[in-house]
Length: 88
Image (cartoon, rainbow, N blue to C red):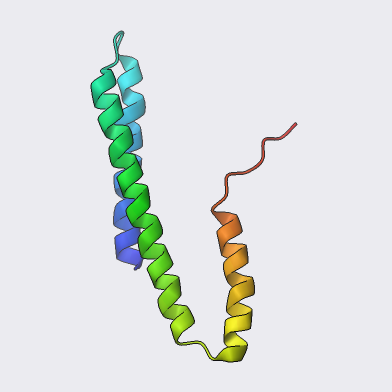
């Protein structure tokens, strides 16, 4: 799980760098920008799927009491994936 997520996060960083690097041009390639955005979406989808499956495997080995704790834990984990609220 860790290796897969690290690889996807690294790929995401490279794609973001390339995407925003397009702004250095006087006339950014909008076709290329659209392709990078699509690739970023696919990358994020893979990352979320791998993470979901990882936690599913953990839950599968939990007993009844541990599953109650898991449900609290997963709420906290899910909250960490949300974007922060803007500060006033």
